[in-house]
Length: 212
Image (cartoon, rainbow, N blue to C red):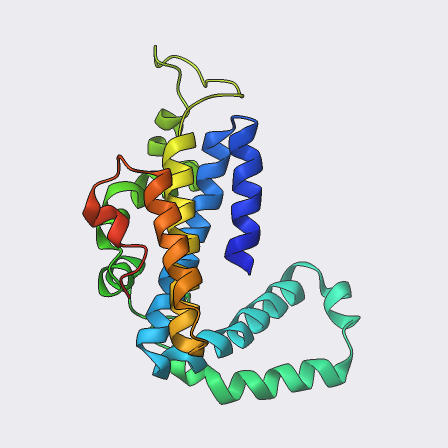
């Protein structure tokens, strides 16, 4: 549902010709679709995916103690104790990868679920756009390369819509398989819709919407 909601936001940005802003949304949708397919392929990792939230909460609380002690002290003692207990129970699983729920990179996860080509083609650029590095700055540049092109702009509308649409198709396919809800006909219609919307895409790129 999150990916479907994001696709609605992406469509609005595309409608008003803010493709580079839409690219940031599409990147998030791509990651979510990869994670869903990866977890379907590796159900033993689901607990790590969920429990990493405790690590994030503990890290935020530690930052709160350091930078806003008054706000930290306002939190009920029972809630803090419960968080500390939960953290003690799960933190040992994340010692080798403290900043993520998994030690497997997004590149490797994408490769395992059939989205490796999409990752190699667009992910580094999307990350640059999202994080504001030099790749992202150059992507925002005018054709002359001397200034940022103001919105609205046609840049990255097509690519963002293709990537976002592929992500929607992939998560629906994954959900259908995991939940075993026998929605094969609607899922086939989704994939047919993708192929009809983007007939110029290479067959291998289109097939990544269903590989898991």
